Image (tube, rainbow, N blue to C red):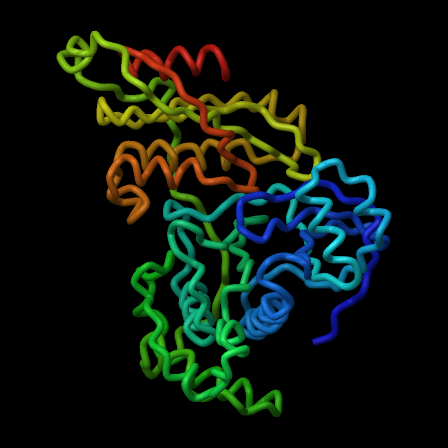
Length: 381
C-alpha cells in the first residue's frame, strides 16, 4: 500500500467533534482532505493504525476514503488566528495523514438500512483490529453517494499505547476479548458466519496467507461466508412533522412557573469546507418538565442556493431520526431508549456532517411545547 504525497496549500477549517482536532486542508494536487495531525495528543502510532486498518478495509471490499501523506509547512501555521489550531499546526510540521474529504456526506444512523453482508464485513474488521470506536454514539460511518463508508480507525490496534511499558506480546492482543454489544451494527452479528474462512482463501490468492482466526474469533466464530457484498444503502422513508407532538393539555396547564431549559439550533451545512449553513430545526430539553423535542423545517430552495447538488430528502430523513430519538422510537435502537438527558447529550454532540447541532444555549419557559414552536419561528422559518 503506497500513499501519494501532497503538500498542503491552504488550511480550510478545524473539525471539532473529536479529541484530536483534525482539519480540512487543500493540497497542491487540487484535492481536499481531512488532515490528521502528527502533533495531536495521541501521536503518530494512531496515524499508523489508521493506515493499516484502512488497507484491511479496502481488502475486505469496504468503502473507505483514499489516504495520502500531507506535507505541512510553516507558513500554513503562521497566519492561523485560532491559537489552539496554530499550536497544533506548528507541532505538526512535516508529514501528516490526509483522508479524502467526502463533500456532502451524511452521518450514519440506525434509520439507515445497510445490507447484512456489508455490515458483517464491518463487524469482522472491527473484531479483527479490536476497534472500540464504532458505537451508536459515534458510528464513524458516513453515507456518501448511496454507500456506507468506514472512517476513523485510530482507536484500533490499541496495543501501541502500551509499548512504553513493554506490553508488546502479539498473542496477548489476539486473545483480548472484544465486545460487540455497543457496536452500531450489532444487529447484523449473525451474518458474520465464517468470514475468516473466506478471508483466508483471499489471502492465499494474494500470496499473503497470514490471518486465520482473530477477526471472526473475536466476533462470532461461525463457518460460512455470506454472499457478495453490495454495500448499497437506502434510508427508511420518514419525514419530520411540521409541528412536533407536545405534552398533554393538562400537563401544560400545570406549567405556570418558568423552568430552565437547554436548546440547540440544528444546521444544514451542505459543504463543511465552505462553512455556510441554513438553520433547519431546533432541539429543546427541559429536565424539570421531563421534556425533549425537536421542531424541524427544510426549505429546499434555500438549501440549494448554497449547494444545488444537496439531497434535500436526505436532510429531511436525518432530521426525522432526530425527531424519532426525541420521541423514544424503539425502532431506532439504543440512541432512542436512554433517559432524556442521555438522548439530548447524544443529539447535541458536535458533528462535521451535513446536519449538525450548533452550540448549546439556555433559557427559561413556562411551556416547553410553545417554546419549541416559538424558537422554530424565530430561528428557522
